[in-house]
Amino acid sequence: MKRNQNTEPHRHARASLSDNKCEYIFYVVLPGMRRSEIEVNIHKKELTVSAVRNDSLHGLYTARPALKSWKESFRLPADADTLMTAAVYHKGELEIHIPKGENIPENHIHRIHVY
Picture 1: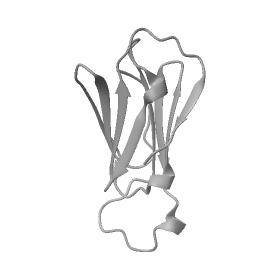
Picture 2: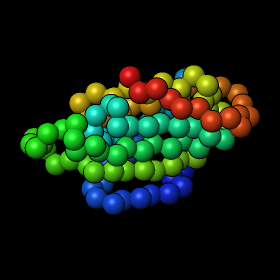
Picture 3: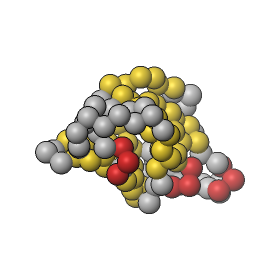
């Protein structure tokens, strides 16, 4: 995966990629975010992850340093089967699973639901 852009208005999120013979797994740590504040989209083999913290949902106290907003895009490999992408967010960590397939041309936009 190749990074295309990086906006860093407040704190940094940590992102990494691993893969195995069946899938690509993209990890991003988004401290202080809620699942509803995270958006994952894929358009033309480009994965975009964005998060914007809505302070009215969090109250006055945050136990750990919180990220205010983050957005980054990554170019996916040609064999990424974006139709079957799944995303899970738990305790500040987002995990996106993208199965490997054959070279699948895709031009439509997918909004991935974050579980």
